[in-house]
Image 1: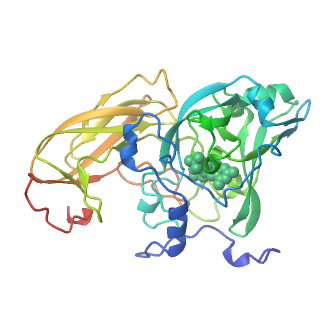
Image 2: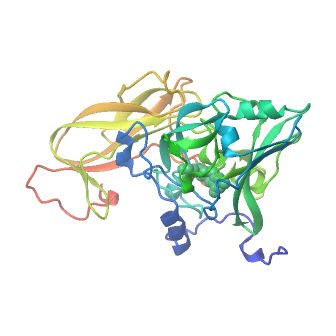
Image 3: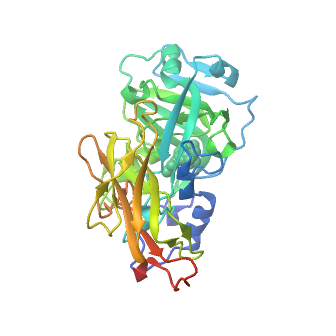
Amino acid sequence: MTESGLGEISGPGRVAEVDEGISLEELALAARNHGMPLEAMRYDVTPLGLHYLLIHYDIPMLDPDAWRLAVGGLVGEPLVLDLAALRAMPRRTVRVTMECAGNGRARLDPRPVSQPWLVEAVGTAEWTGVPLREVLGAAGLGAGAAEVVFTGADHGVERGVEQDYQRSLPVAEAMREEVLLAYEMNGAPLAPQHGYPLRLVVPGWYGMTNVKWLRDITVTDEPFTGFQQAVAYRLRQEAGEEGEPVTRIRPRALLVPPGFPDFMSRTRIVRPGPVRLEGRAWSGEAPVERVEVSVDGGLSWAPAELDGDGGTHPWAWRRFRFDWTAGPGRHELSARAVTADGTVQPEEEPWNRGGFANNAVQRVPVVCVPAGTPVEAPLGSEDL
Ligand SMILES: Nc1nc2c(c(=O)[nH]1)N[C@H]1C(S)=C(S)[C@@H](COP(=O)(O)O)O[C@H]1N2
Ligand SMILES: [Mo]
């Protein structure tokens, strides 16, 4: 029991019972925090409004004239910066694929009860802002600086702990040249839901790192132990474990859903003959080196054609294509990313209590029928 009287909702995150369906609470989260429709992977840069959203509490409404960024802690000279001051500093644009650490959670069995993502918690944006290292350089890092703590203007309660949304980065990560304090997304001021007026963008790290509605940056000489660092976003098998921190985005490839969908099951329908499959692959760990596609439920894999060399936009997803000749009947399609260090996406979901970093290979049920042929119902993947 805590002083706030919220004891009944404190404690470790919950794992659903066997056969427990998605609750109204999970539905409420899913309706607020929408995914990116997978057909939007056709765009190199996700159009505003199609990028996924994850907001733990409420979207704060911030007055740009009154808003300030405080930079303090273990620095030579504490700073208070307004938007004009940040915009007057060197600017840089980086194309970044961002993915929520909980992407794929709803597929786990048993299911961790939280935002129930399938695989759509991803998007790619062009973020423009001042490199964080410029701001830290202007303030001057003090001797012994170890971590940088970022605080958002949003406030809420999570498992009984009242808090501002806060995350930290080790100084070495914070000083990477592509880490931004971003004030623009796709060439426009940040939208309220994406962190207006300023957010942190850390290419290659899972979404939770990219603190929105930033209001404070504090340099410390010891590891940050706030809720989102030490309690949430850790890989644990048991509730009591310390767990490994969730950091970089694991490799993943996803297919643009081929053909057209059945309304309820979303099963895809294609015509017999040539079908061009395409998709996107990304990794915050070693870069994606190749993508393989399976059209027979993962029995055999063949290389896809992969666009670009990752040189121009090293932090963004890459497009792949694969020409398939579909025959009548039911099929299961998959794609998997292979990285430069030889890591291959796993076939089975890597389970942990929080449902984080699940990068299991996607399975896409497809029914191939000639035009004019009735499509037999039901089309659920359980019928494959
Ligand atoms: N202040 C604040 N920053 C935040 C969050 C939040 O709830 N509050 N959510 C985080 C999580 S979990 C993710 S996945 C990303 C999502 O960013 P987006 O909504 O712009 O896609 O923002 C991160 N930054
Ligand atoms: Mo997230």
